[in-house]
Image (cartoon, rainbow, N blue to C red):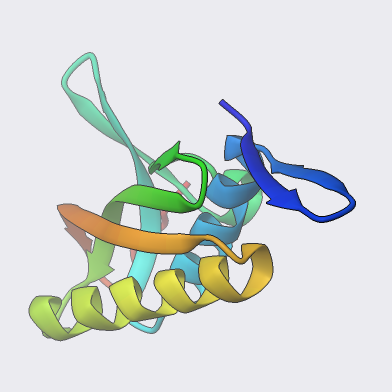
Length: 121
């Protein structure tokens, strides 16, 4: 469903795909994030780099608010709880500043750990 903001001179609609892309790009820019996870498919986690930043991102957009779910792969030896808190903050700030929507929640599911020299495709 597309986001619709009512203004004095008309409506502004922000699609879910736009919010999803903003969230995905902010996530990949967060230190400690190796990649987004596409979820489980035939028992294997698909790992995706910046080529398709919407993978691993699910959004629910309401009239003035958005909720975001992220599935990620973190780098080994990074404090997962700290990386996830930073991720939540970065995504919230990016979406709110670019869209004007209020982000009510950013849920993070860590689906894997990657070594720095792992090839993530």
